[in-house]
Length: 583
Image (cartoon, rainbow, N blue to C red; front, side, top):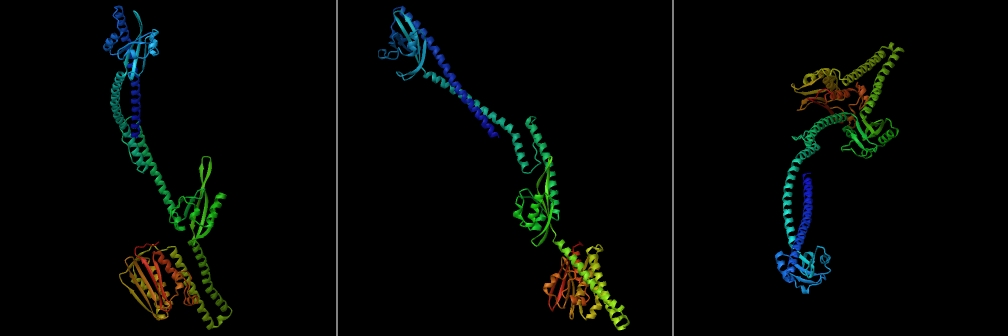
């Protein structure tokens, strides 16, 4: 900015100098010419008077006169008669000179006028000022012409112009220096404003300008400082609002994507990327480039066309997705403008699985309950129809009814246990418990079954291992694993190992039983899943034992692992984090 102002000042000064020089040159020339003309006319009139006096005394000699007075007056003198013939000249031989009748100043003087003219003299080879004065003396009538070269006048004018230029240049230098100082002083506040504005544009909203001037720049600086304070406050509010908005979006369990009228994305949240496996920025891109699913396109387009809420379900990347589409309206003055469409994408895979599990659970529970109830009802009807009179038959039927009743009791207890675990009942009653003590209690409870199966149980646990947990839950976990091992081990032994690592308590229950085929291992913890249904029922299993184990492990954020070899045995390994809290 300062360079532009200085350039403007220099241009103005330069134009002023040029105009001044041209004006001085013109006026100087005119002044000197006018002065010289008046001087020659005055001098000519004096010479004509002298010439008249000489004629009165009869001493008139034109050649002698022009020679004498030419040197005295520093001019060239020429005397011409009325016919234009040169009769005397101070510088040239008058006898060889041309007739001057047609010279402008001579012809005017012959007519009785004092005339002057400037022209180039071919004889002398320079510009001359010619002044002709009419003379009418004794025995002669003609013209006295004075010739003065203009070289001296030009030299005087040039010298004058040079001095003028020197003066103007000195004044111009002073003016430029003053202009620099003035512009510098004027530009300093503007430079501060510019630097502050640049910093603000870079995000530094705390920049201030300190100018003490009371003029317009001072008022501008004060207004600028007020603006930065308000701008900083507004940006803080805007950033806070944006941060809150982003936090709300990122905290949503559903994927959000908003598209404009051209189907270009202008808003989305991080959950969308997790649901649809998108790991790049998609703002500004067309939704047709990002998602390739006909159902989503149909929902989107139908919502835009019908201008209403639409919902549908589809499958993307093995995930069951529910898509909600709703137009985005923005009130503009008295009308409402459609800005695009908002898509809410929800992953309902787990919900669908849960619904399936619940449906299967109800079906399985119904089946599991119906089997013993049907058996009990059948035997009761048989007894009512007369079998009760036969003591042996009645006794056998009553034993079967007792077994089926026991099965119903165990099934109901397991269902209630699952419900209690899922509802997290009594899960706040955690204490530091000794793992060796819990395992010994389990062995005491299951000791009748162990003796009946004639199986050896080996326990490996340090007496100092403790775990912060609900004692009954961990006991139930070990009971279910050990009971399961007893059921499927016909001979051999069972190993119960409890150890600890830096991060976890590890519980292993291994048997030398029949083993499990690898294809069944992923489904072992499902409710009512049995590898051999007939064998499981005959052994009194409800099909919920391992599912209960899985839920207890999940309560403590743990993991369960299964290793099995057909004919050699199975190992269940439970890892419970030491620092984990109940979910």
